[in-house]
Amino acid sequence: MSLNVRRIRYPALQLHHVIKKHFSVASKSTAKASELFTDEQRRQRKNVGRIEKIEVRYLGLPHDTTLVMNRELSTPYDCARHIGEKYCRQSALALLDNKTPWDMRRPLRDSCTLQLLNFTSPEPHIANKAFWRSCSFLLGAVLQASFKPEAGLFLHSFPKPNIKSGSFVHDIVLAEEHWNPTVPELRALSIEMIKLSQQDLPIERLDVSSELALEMFHDNPFKREQIPSVAAQNNGQVTVYRVGEHVDISKGPMMGSTGLLGRCTISASHPIKEGSERGKHFYRMQGVALPAVLRIGHFAYNILENRSRKLNSAKLPNEPFEDTVAEQVA
Image (cartoon, helix red, strand yellow):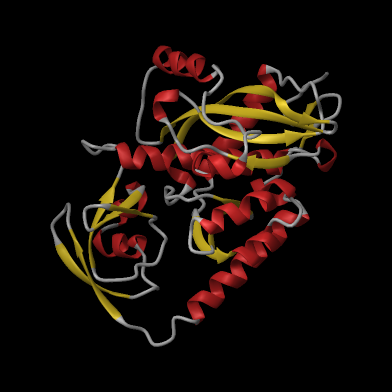
């Protein structure tokens, strides 16, 4: 096994050297899912029809104010642009009517009160869960873009965020039975997460029909197996998120941009033997991260890294999906 700055090699798997733009090596199936996402997003916006106005009562600094926005078109991010540029950069999530977490780039449906949540507020638990969930999602994007096709990579799912566990998670399937990434290989994946952060890409949400979701994930048998159960619990709809060209299933909400991700470490890969079969082997990828606005010392962060290496006890991907859909799709 050999390693250099630009490339990682090991017997059956190979990480891509990513040039200039992180998603330049996205697979055809990933690009197709993103294309379907764009088409459906455009169709939904077109179907809004006659534009109706709603009143959004913003509560927060620098002062409370009422904004007149467009129903089904305007988002909390649009509201933040009216309030001030720093609120666009710092806000991770919105809270509607003091009770409903809402994605920053998700269109508003009705008149409401609006608060913008960040990671330094006195009660950041809602934003922190969205951050943890977003890290799992972004890890999937990095893994999808990093492995060559012969690795046989399939993204399975990621469990709902549990900050007390000490790690965010993404469960995957590989063709290799005994993949044990080295420390430099895990570090290379961590670097790709940081590159994704530096691009400050928007994280977009879209509700689609189960039929369209099946088309988006037609190359992934695990996603296709999950979609009927997800749709059954969501009035026939499947919520998908996109960053760059990467699309995945999640209930959300998520933070509005990759730029909110700060220090990050992909710390461990745990083989999951139960449920594995010939040519399809489960692994639990784990990591730890901090929001960009938070700074801690090297010693304290090293404690977090060590803790994140312990196998996360969340529901495993090989457990019956119908019984644990709420646990497996965050």
